[in-house]
Image 1 (cartoon, helix red, strand yellow):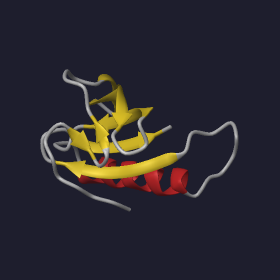
Image 2 (cartoon, rainbow, N blue to C red):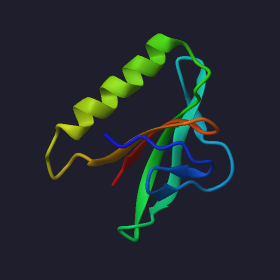
Image 3 (cartoon, rainbow, N blue to C red):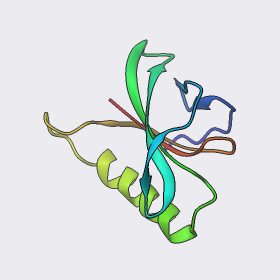
Image 4 (tube, one colour):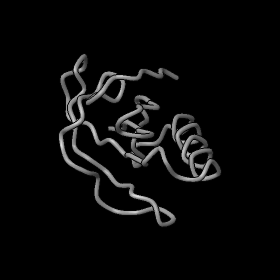
Length: 94
């Protein structure tokens, strides 16, 4: 798992400006479109605000670990999991 703390980036993926849409347990959460800098391909970035309860953050991290262990043509692949100060927790998938 790669963890980097850069404003506007989720690991090797570039985050577009603006909030993520949606919610998870009363928290701001959602998905953003992004672009993987090294692979030069579009990615989805699932974002969860960092100020939520620790249990929700642990659930999000567990979800990332489970997704990283899956390999199926009908399931997205996890590319990165990032704890970014400005953006919160980010899961980069494609």
